[in-house]
Image (cartoon, rainbow, N blue to C red; front, top):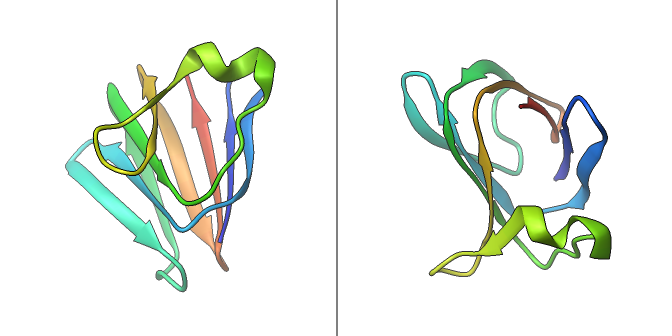
Length: 92
């Protein structure tokens, strides 16, 4: 499944992932391959990215390795859309 995380300044991440957990306004939820289409508003929290991913060198300070096997990105708010195994997260 393909994930793209976009901030007002630039694209923070784009690439293939195994799964993604996001802080939805009604609670955290995880999206896996072949998940049903969804659009949601995001609240302040952490996007958790799972899979063998590579973060660009100039953006590594924005991400942290989680206690589990995952890479985490803190956000203030945003929206997320998943359609046909492509996730686009617009974050602040």
